[in-house]
Structure formats: structure tokens, C-alpha cells
Length: 511
Image 1 (cartoon, rainbow, N blue to C red):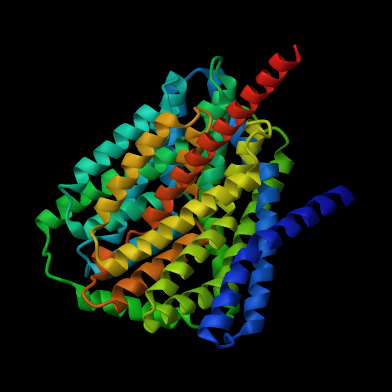
Image 2 (cartoon, rainbow, N blue to C red):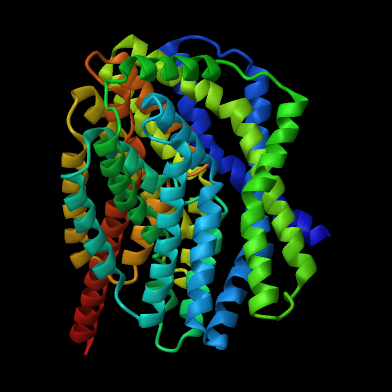
């Protein structure tokens, strides 16, 4: 018990360290630029404390429950030798977790309102969920076949670009954002554990090179599927301009963002919602474990404890965000757009992108696994800083794109070309981790704030359409971490080779 409390205290200390950048950014903008004390300061402080506790519980729960059962299932499937059941499991995990993903539900509902029902929220969610199920199954098949991930990802990006030229402009930003919101806080660790467990149990596979990459597939395929959905919908439906509806949606968001009012019922429903989000994953895991593998779960009490900690951690995390971060973050975003100082908007976008990514639970889970699999060659803190820097650049540039009114696909296509070039030069071990980093950056913390900033900018700037210009920031936040992580890998490899060359020269001089 004493050891467990000591470990949890360490996790809690690290959680507060992760939240520190957000607190600094918010305090800086609120005190120096907005120059006003935020309302409900006590609620904000309590909320951020609850976020830290939730994050600590979540991480401990992953280590106890999600990681072991995910890796165990992958190993059992590999031993069983049934490709059909393994691919069905991969598809079911992808579909079931995505269809209940809160970030996707929020984006789909906004898209339905802004498009005046032309984009149907249910069918948009089904399209994205099917695409993620297909992606996880395809990524699993790639591990089984031992194919290099770069061939699949580059082919996928080329397909995204081709479809973009045929897709209606109203769907492009939404399609790119759909790729960023599919990878939830619970899905990411489980999918990562599945990929790493599978790569570890197949002879000739390298967990670092072959185990990562499933999340990258889950971020890529929705962009293609949603654009195809948009082509069908916009060729059949009434496409009358819908700007007044969009304005109304953003105004409603503004009203919601201003204050947080505690409600026991809402708090209880948040717990019910969290359980509902996690339930499909648990049902799928235990069905396949007992009905297909036909083997009891090892250390069941530890697994159940871990899953319970994940649920409670996520619940506390979401409640804390609603109390502490979202009201003040969204209010600052709207106040800055009203001030009309574009440089301040870009600075806020950059800093909020960096700080929220550092607190992102999904990224933390991947970073822990990357350090473990690379035997310490990839440091989790360095990886997280590099990814956060990529998100910051992405959101800053994405905000500039909205202000300038440029079409999104020019930026995204240029970004994909850079990804392809970097893939060629980056060391093999970093490429799958870089691709996955693009998928884990847009989750529980980042999506609501970034979506609010994008829609706020598009509504406040004359000549912008929230449906065309307001979406897309999440896509920028997913793209640029791939470049910064591969850039980090290229630099690290160059430095390592340079050091080895110097050492060999010194040995030559001595001899």
C-alpha cells in the first residue's frame, strides 16, 4: 500500500508539472493582455487540481490494466494463428471506440448545425467509425505481412490529395479534422498495446519499427472516407449558403464558454458518459478474450482495478477541464479575436497548442511506450516537447490561414510533401512513432479549445465562412508533429554519427 501511494504521489507531481505550461499561458494572457481577473477563480483552481488527480489516476490505470490486457490479447491471437479473428478484433476495436468518441460527437453535431442538416451527424460518425475500423484492421495486416509503414502512409496521403480535388470545399476542413479527432484517450493506449504486442510476438518483427503506426492509419483513412461522403452528400443535397446558421452556432458556443456552474446531476451524467465511452472497448476485449481466445484473463483483479482507475481518471480529468480550463481558455480565444490584433492571436494559438499538448493523456501514453520499446533511446519528455512544438507551429500556422482566408488544401498538400521528404531521410525507428504522434495530439484537451478558436476566428473575421474556414485547425495540429518528430530523429541520428566518427578518429590518433 505504501509503495502504491508513493508511485501515485510521483504520478501526481508529474501531472502538476504537465499542467504548468497551461497555467502560465492562461495567466500571462489574462493578466498582461486581457488585463482582467477571470470570473470563478476558485472554480478554476479546483478544476485544474482535479485535472492533475485525473491524469495521475489515468496513467496508473493504463500501466495496471489497459497496456497488459492489450499486449496479452495480441500475443494470444498471434499464438492462435487465426488471421480472420485478429483482423475482426482490430476492426471491432476501431469501430466501437470511434463511434462513441466524445470529440467526434462534438465535431459531428457542430457540422450538422452549421450545414443546416445537410451533413448528417449520425452518418458522419458512422463514416468515420467505419474508416477507423478499416484502418486498424489494415494496420494490423501490415504488421503481419511485415511491410514498411511508409509505403502505406505515403500512398494514403497521395489518395487524400487526389480526393481533395474532387471534394466540395465545405467538407475539406471537416474531413481533415475528422482524421484528428478519431484517436481517443482510451483507444490510443489499447491500439498501441495491440500493435506492440503483435510485433513482439512475431518472429522477425521489431516492436519499435513494426509495433507503432496503427494510430497513424486511424488518423489517415477518415480524411478519405469523409471527403467521399461529402462528394455524395453535396452532389445530392441543397447547398444554399448557410452562414447565418453558422454564426448562431458560434454565438451559442460563446455563451457556453463564459462560465462554469456546478451541477450534481451534470457531474453524475459526466461519470455515466465516461463509462459509456469506455464500455464498448471493455465489452469487445472481454468478448474476444473469453469467446474467441477461450482463456481467462491473467491477474484479473489488477486489470479490473486498472480499468476502474482509467474510468475514474478520465472522469475527473473531463470534470476538471470543464471547471478550470475550457471556460477561461475559450473566453480568452474570443476576447483576442474581438481585439483584432492578429499577432496576439497567433501567439495565443502557438502557446495554447504547446501547453495543451504537454498535458494530453494520449500523447503521454505513447511517449511512455516509445521510451520502453526503444530501451531509453527515445526519452518520453523529449518526445513530448518535440510533439508539442509541432502542434504549436501547426495551430499558429492554421490560425494565420484562417485570418488570411487561404484554401486549406494548399497548406495540407505542402505539409504532406514535406512528410514524404522527411520520411526518406529519417531513421527507420522514428518514422512509425512520428506518424502516430500526429494522431495522438488531438484528443481530450486539445480538440475543444482548438475547435472553439477556429470557429471563433472564422465567425469574427469578415468574409470567412465557419463551415469552410472554421474547421481545419485540428488537421494542422495532426500534421506538423510528424515533421518535428522526424526532424528530431534526423538530428539525433546526425549527432550520433558525428560522435561515432569523432570517437573513431580519436582511436586512430591514439593507435
